[in-house]
Image (cartoon, helix red, strand yellow):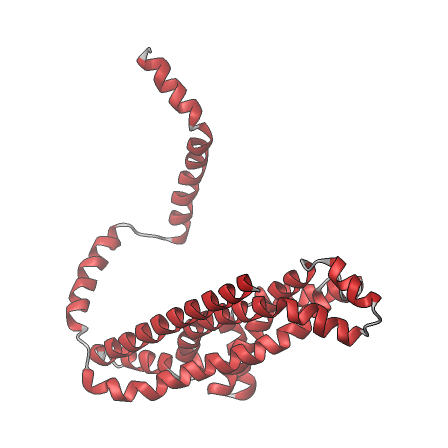
Length: 266
């Protein structure tokens, strides 16, 4: 085959991908220029960060001091996830088209979408102004964030239920409450637990970020250490955070697999 024809054939094959790259590349460079991104500072920053990494030797004597803040962060995430999941179920019933009337569903869906548009850190800033700094504001922030996320996921799961099974329960004379309990909640419970475990993983990470801006916990310890240029203590906090996140993810993954395996057996 002619080399030129072969090249043209290859270009035609990937012309869509090449077109996307040709459009995105100038947009990316244009956005970098508008935002004031200086690529020459990248190499300088990497050199300085290498020096900083050498300074960040863990201060193991501070490890015991990190256990209580770490436990506080885990408990903030746990309570926020539990409260948010319970409340999200009620919002999900009101947001499901096969359960709630259209006017209620549209209103609740709008509220859930509005909440998801607000990051938890923004919600926390409002709550800190209202309730002051501390764990309570962090729990409320994670609870509200959990409602927005899980409310939509659970509502979608309810809408995907087999309508025939719901109609058969109604046909035997079940009340509305019995329909919700035996026809809906029992069927979606494995999904709810799986969603809640995934949200708990996310809440663990968020509790660290929120802790640095007023919610307390290990995030506050990390912020204080960096603010005081105590890099050894900051590194110890980072090690504890990594261990906390890793253990949570492994535990959550194990429980989700168990739930799926039990569901498959049924």
